[in-house]
Length: 273
Image 1 (cartoon, one colour):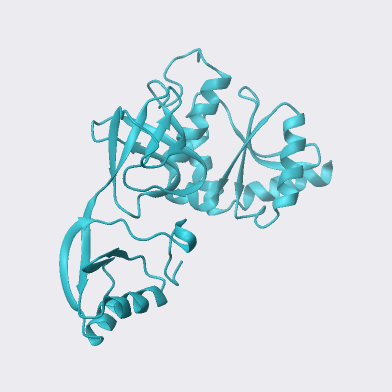
Image 2 (tube, rainbow, N blue to C red):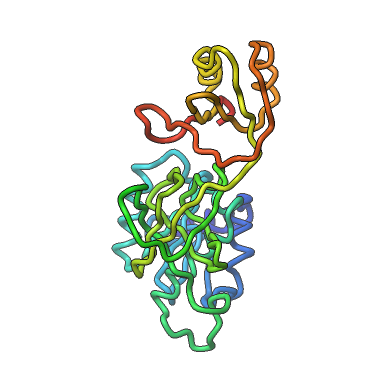
């Protein structure tokens, strides 16, 4: 036990960037409840713990990275102690703090539906949450719409604002590529239609589109394929390559809905990904 306490003390002194960022956002009852950091719980040291909400927050990508089996065993033990475990990737904390805090607030709200001092959850009622996605053609009756670029349509947890200025939280089981015409279902059954936003693209035309498409695909570049043209996002390296191949190139503004990955599913990523 003394070793665990000393280890926890060392971890508090040497927090990762993600741990420090999240701690600054949840410390001092900023969410209406008290969190402690690097807390000994049985044989483990958990990243953040709130007794009143029976909540443990764990960050992956730092001390716990690449240990999936260990993390599952760890989570099962923590849950036997009466706590709910929420896990976030480090990059979620560093790049999407708004979405991370919304997930935490939702869990705190469920544990403490009537905060004694009101407004303790950061103000206002909790955001409606979308946990599921319906693909285009398999739903009807949109309550609202949200317009997103191709890059913004690749998400797991994020706070979005509809075109009607309503904020909601997306909390999907895994990172998902949303397509134009899909719909996010809120917990109360309302549907939010996904609209592909207008964005700057390169239009590619030429005598041999099949050959040009092959070279684009060889670079793992997302490409929208149409009968008489190809569309890609701006990339000066790809643009120069296509020009050397004799393609006709034009800058346009258009929704971007490229082909999916293998077998029509997932995303095609460049080598940088």
